[in-house]
Image (cartoon, rainbow, N blue to C red; front, side, top):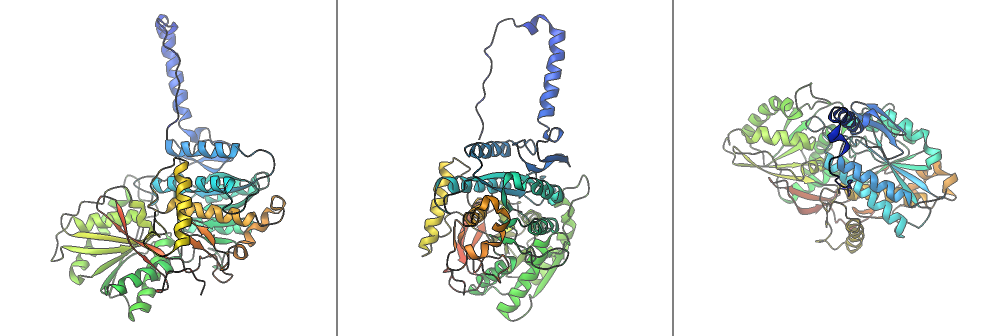
Length: 507
């Protein structure tokens, strides 16, 4: 979206034509001032501070996090929706994420970040104009940035806590990646009695305190954990009798998404097939590549010997337990080598592969690959099922999204998951008596508000929690997607983590 611009009328022979030297100096000053304005880290707004070339913290006045025009437009939209709420009768939800991913070195994709914010905007609009999760009080939305790799999570958390009373912050949503730092942020917010609702972080231990490994009391998430994604993947493989699998896993100590995904797949495969994964290969992704080296180049030497093992083992399927950005590097490394008697391989992975959506996959002249992944959600995922309630709930979200003239690409599931995270927070807050004076109570009411008898009518499907699910949604189905070489995707199935019918049930 771009905003309309106005300009002054053209006048003949202006003052500057008669005073060239002075005007040249003025132009230099104006340009320098303009460049400074477009370097927002030189003038971070209220609630934010400069760090690593961007603004981190809680954006209280809509000052941009970086020069990203799309994010700036989304911030304007949020400001406009917040401005419609007058008086003291309101609550606030904060979306905390890496709002400034760095292409080439960061494993997060800016497009996915945009979609997450769009989903929260749609949910705020629906919560304030429809009775989808109650009617009052109205909700404001604020954005917070902890930067690439969540390196500045403590600064963002401190700002959220500093302004929780004046802004009536009842919940923090987002926390888009499963990292040690995002887990620390979730734990710190929970200890301060703020509800934490991750839209997409799926690491199995994301709901545990990084120091004590005890469950985080006030943590919930919309996406199923990696163990559910792995079980759904194994269920899909068993249905197709594809048991000869090679596991290619990232053993990074900082990326808990990749590490727990590899562990979860091993366990799910053993339970489903009765024996260990036939072959396993390991690589190590960087938390931050060396200066002057992009992420893909750093990983190429590690993927070369894995290709050799693929040629020797000739698996039916390669299960890739790693980030989407690293999957792209892996495909590039494998595809540039010879076919070695294998004209094609199938690659199966998990939801982070959606970060590749919209851009072409690497050229693979040597060996072709069909790429599949278990997604958090995708557009129209219920259309080919008998899930009438889920279809109705998704369509209501999609209509609201379209009416707001947001990006129309809902296939990666990011907008849907963030929409559901905000509705979960608001719906819970609205049942807390006198919530404006009891904002610390919201975090402890989620399980009882949206239990098995009253699931949230989410765009990603019905969402419910139990006291012993530790913030994980119960029995949530996952769509199986095929990622085309062009970056287009197609849904091929819906898989249940239990292997049974994907009708919602807490049993």
